Length: 123
Image 1 (spheres, one colour):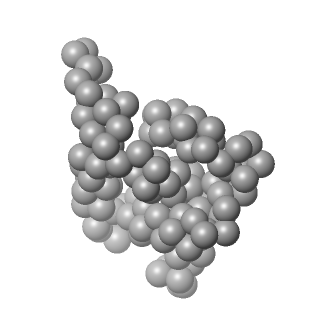
Image 2 (cartoon, rainbow, N blue to C red):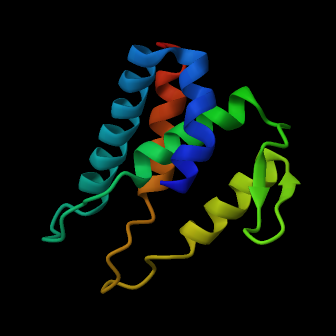
């Protein structure tokens, strides 16, 4: 939710309230469909908003690639370009969920970003 708070307000300002809601929901549904596609025989449910938040982060990256608004570090905040901040977040989440017993779904992030890219022209 920290990522949604950091990046979501600017994307919502760009799209407007209703279009942003549509965009967010499309990214979440796209990530969920990708989960079903990759886990047809799984009994583990997909609960969470990581795919939708990933789509919002992808939209922020397209809108503001060099914006120094993203901050790294909680004690001493440092301005970091959005490209670097989002690349680090993506690489950290891509390495999770590699074991079958892990409940983290690493395909949710690419699913949200793919949905954001396919929805980009519609919004």
